[in-house]
Image (cartoon, rainbow, N blue to C red; front, top):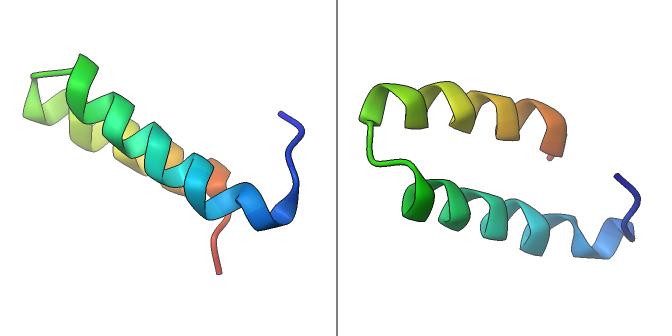
Length: 43
């Protein structure tokens, strides 16, 4: 995925909101939150 570094936080936030909106199972949410965190590579 290509995006500008200054957009990283907004993209991360949108991914988390999308996950919470689309997945109601808390166990699956936790699984995918870790995936999003890993690939966001925030410092």
